[in-house]
Image (tube, rainbow, N blue to C red):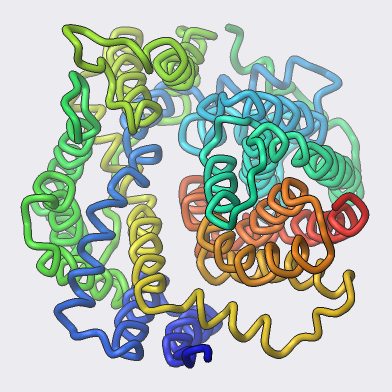
Length: 562
């Protein structure tokens, strides 16, 4: 006799939905959902705060990809990188926003498919290079862009990076998602070669490229209709600028580096008397710095309380940003003209060093010790790439490390609480798992829907993967729930489907949910903050049509291929 499934933990899902519908601060909503879920599952408060603190410390790696490049990007922007990128693309007469983004989509998806996921990314590629180039292509053709048009172009830049990454990386046989699917199927006594799972992801990857490329072509058409499609009179933009085992390098060093940067940010904020909320903002960044510096030395429950305090500060408007001195536009353009294409070097060094470190040095040992942290080779390589790039940009621009810290603070304050949201969501995922939210969702899915028809079962599996990912913000969390509840027993067991096809297309269906949820903050909320979009959901809005079309394609593919 099956034991009863506790549905009360779904209360936390309701808190998430209501909070986002009412547009409450996401950090506050996530913290409230975690506490509500824990209480509904009869967890003591101490256990809830311990779970929050444990997950918060474990997820310190999530903000590194955003936080570490900020000093480099800030200095490059100070010296005219954005202006030079716009001028560079405007020299290509045939360049349009759609064509540029289609080329980037192809490169992003192909490089991700061979494991080079670090070659793109929102902080190191979209903000400093892709976004200004897209703006430059549009301005070269249409002249000055109205702000709503500019915002939509920027949202599509972020969306294109996400689509290329998500639907490319899962056809790389050594990617973590393939290992997760292979391991889960083995636990269900289904032995499938990882290569077969990767290969069966190719049809969806092709569909994703075609669907989003069509939308990018339609974006060009929309721009032409909206702005008239005529070359503006006057001088074109191009004329403005011519030119835990022992290892040697551990990820702990990056946590300390990030903590140091956040500590400097907090101290600068505390001493900035012009800052409208210097005390509450300084406290927010100080608490965050402490978690990076000594979070693993503090009792998890104390870290959990600190995370909730940060959520309260953010939720009640305590995180603001001050006035930051920037170079006048004329000086930025003069600097861009002087440095020319050299400005691209530091920006491109970050992904280049990251890839080289990941590919060439992951197995290197010195005196029997791994050179790079074996479990975090990519993150450690990223940190090294950022340090190398910072040295190069300071040498090129003749600026100082102190100025790089000021620029880093400017961008950190521009991001605000969104920088912390990915960690909060990772924490929520752990609380959901401990409280049994996944079991409750699987129970509801399989108990009240008739699975006797193949199309119904396929639709429930694909849509369920998307919906559960929307709730959790992570397709990895959705996969064991939906595959264990629907994929293995029904699609494979009842309809004798190919488990490799089921797994590959199922995970890609989860990624459709990732494109449509604010819970996937690293991909949807943080890029909106990085690009300074007025609508924090602008990236999601740009992705929803693509995600829904791919989801329909997945249902069709799974029905006929499995």
